[in-house]
Image (cartoon, rainbow, N blue to C red):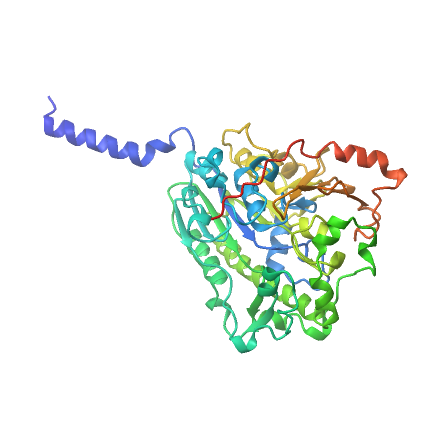
Length: 486
């Protein structure tokens, strides 16, 4: 006969075991892969593996591309930080949510208050999810979405500003009509070590996480803020890109002459001012330096993974939230629907031995099919064997991870609505880039013959059928702007 005391002790032990282990029963096992989820802010195709600029120096990102699948036509859902990241992490398009700008938090929208985000979904299925740096729109507070995470190991991002005497040496800040750009457009080397920056500390904290023992599979997110403006980075990264050797991106005189009025508004006047003041080369240097610094931060995390016990059981995803113009189409910023603002690096690396991964770890593969960052939610839950969701706007690109040349008829859809009226879209197929503005102005570019988008073919009869096919993919409805201020 078991005594009441012993019975109670055994019951307590059983409850403790259930609490510690029961939530994972039937959901995870020793073969469940971890996810390392690395975001780099405002990263365009100026990385070595994409060839967007001949002087890009990004050895760590390039090395990851050599191991995984590099998606050469990956596009954001919106060319602006918050709507892009909200789309990726909720799996819903801006035209579905009404989140088009940076001023509205998605959980303030009643029907999205309890929406299960990508990291939350992993938590529901036995994972721990930790975040550091900028993954949602901010690295801390409400805008970092604490409900999505078990914890946040870093709540700061970026690099310090230089002393006031070293800021705005270009003396243009009072010339820009866009007040946000007037405040942010600056570049300067910092007389500090990289280890003193928040981005480096974020990367180092992610590396520390990978050096620890974890009883449960993890979803580890690491957000690097540079090369987001302002382009402040330690001196050593400016030294990698000597000013007198800088190559300027190709531009065409009168490039905007065949662009509709709404497109010219998006282009703005800031680049013309920068060019007239002789600062274009300095801007290119600043962006390249900030990108090389971001790459070094990425390297800290990847080195830790490569030296960890998790190397052979961790999926790595590296993505930028959108692209960036530095002179192309007479534009310096994001917030446009052309290629430079919408294309972004995307690399997915599966560990050896995962289903569909038959090549050696160091064998590079590229995929030229158009994909969207909004596809990452359904893709990752499929790759990790979690139950699929039927309420997401994206589609899993897991088949392309295994077979990058698989036939893929789907284009990428990009949405931008910088003001409180009207919505603009782009449709990017493998060959064509189509833009439809809110006033029905159109652009169409044949990216095979015109990769710089210098010749608008929207009214060319030889391309009318191509345009007709692209128009079919435009969202049928656009949610109203969600206007509540933070």
